[in-house]
Amino acid sequence: MSRLVVVSNRVAVPTDGPAQAGGLAVALREALQENGGIWFGWSGKTSPKPQDEPTMTEVEPVTYATLDLSRRDHQEYYNGFANRTLWPLFHYRLDLADFNRQDYAGYLRVNTHFAERLRPLIREDDDLWVHDYHLIPFASELRRLGVENRIGFFLHTPFPTMEVLLALPSHDRLARSLCAYDVVGFQTVNDLRAFHEYIVHEAGGEILGDNMVRAFGRTLKAEVYPIGIEVETMQRTSAHAMQEPAVRRLVKHMGERNLVIGVDRLDYSKGIPERFRSFERFLEKFPAHQGKVSLMQIAPVSRGEVPEYKNIREELEALAGHINGVYGELDWMPIRYLNKGYPRETLTGFYRTCRVGLVTPLRDGMNLVAKEYVASQNPHEPGVLVLSRFAGAARELDAALQVNPYDQDNVAEALNRAITMPLEERRERWESMMAKVHDSSLDKWRERFLSVLRSVPPGGFGNA
Ligand code: G6P
Image 1 (tube, rainbow, N blue to C red):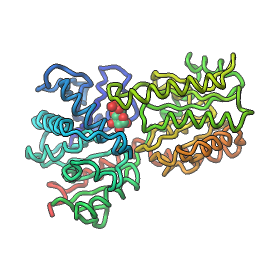
Image 2 (image 1 turned 180 degrees about the horizontal axis):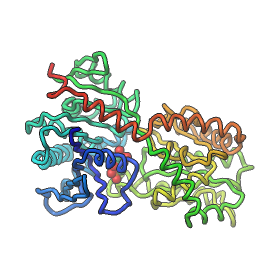
Image 3 (image 1 turned 135 degrees about the vertical axis):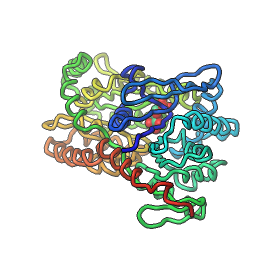
Image 4 (image 1 turned 90 degrees about the horizontal axis):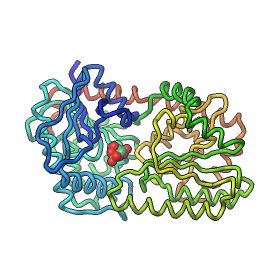
């Protein structure tokens, strides 16, 4: 079988330590381990000048090839166009999107530079799999350099509706470059529909049978591949994690009380301020829970140099302080707000301990915390998932208590329902969600995408 080349902005180099070994990292690493291959991308470091020769780390049978970004590239490509333009735009936050030509030029420059650096490492029969919004123009850059291999792309974030995408000054070039791939994968049917809408109504393209799309002079396959988690590993880990010191401490401190858990990168798309306000509303509307239920919000700082991320941090500190000040008692605090990350294993123990998983993003590509919360539960006494309808995961997890995260009363009522839900109903909902989580496990996601990519005829589906 052909060798695989994975390209992503973040690369999980094993010798850099276990901290990066998240679900996606593990899945991609496994895909590479099957047939050997290269994982190429940013090293996570900056240096005064762009790095010309990638740093190669061999961990048989995978070669990790990483490049440092210059400070300017880091600012314009990563902090700038990727995280101040595309990220807010793709999450429907036009109000937070910054359109700046210099950042856009930096984004294209890094994509060009990365493609040029990868080019000499590519063999004729390699298959390439590129990930996420940082690298949309990557395939068109490789094509320009004469690469004719199969190239697939998976978008981990939502793809916005046409009306939102049109606000991006460079939407045409971006959509054109997306069509330089042979296979494009989205998280949900909503995202695929939004892409189709753009292709038909803005790009003058066509939707053909068998999920094929013809636009900008190319034919490609665009499909839905909902990403999943490693279900069995998660189940095993969560049972073991109950013996971990941090989990035991949590259980001891909780006593008879119930905990609601939220775990998110500190990002405005996750709806954390709205969640805090909804929790306040819950305490107000259902005072019997005062003194008995707390929200534990774990939110490690993310993209801390981007101004909008600094603002949300300040907003949350003020909100948590306000709610704890108004409702807190000597021996009970309504909100436990922690700005640090925990090892995955410990988190699974936290999920298993907490009666409610509160996952209320305003918009999210998939949201794996929702699936992880479900998989970590004790089958005899499962907790309840309260899930935003705007998370990609809501498509599959229809047995969760689904909420509109903008509607505080709705979330407060769902929390009350979750806390008071009889065991029988909790079990029924959990079993139904587990079946769905199994259906879209990480292995299946990866195997499905790669088998479609590998079925692309040599030279692609042809040019129109
Ligand atoms: C989201 C994106 C990923 C990104 C991750 C962490 O899940 O889809 O591409 O790697 O956030 O963000 P960061 O900016 O730290 O890589």
